[in-house]
Length: 64
Image (cartoon, rainbow, N blue to C red):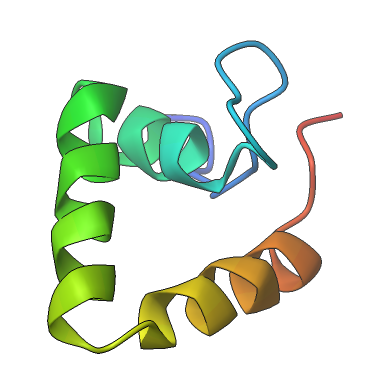
């Protein structure tokens, strides 16, 4: 049986709260690509990504 796949904030590869690194670990992608996509999304949405990031930092648990 395969272990349950869960989304966590990263403890090791964090720059701010570990949200982007946690998403990258979940999808097995390089964290730099997630961070770049996040920056582009934030610029295109006139800063709405900043609010989304901090909401995600509160909602997504840190890896135990």
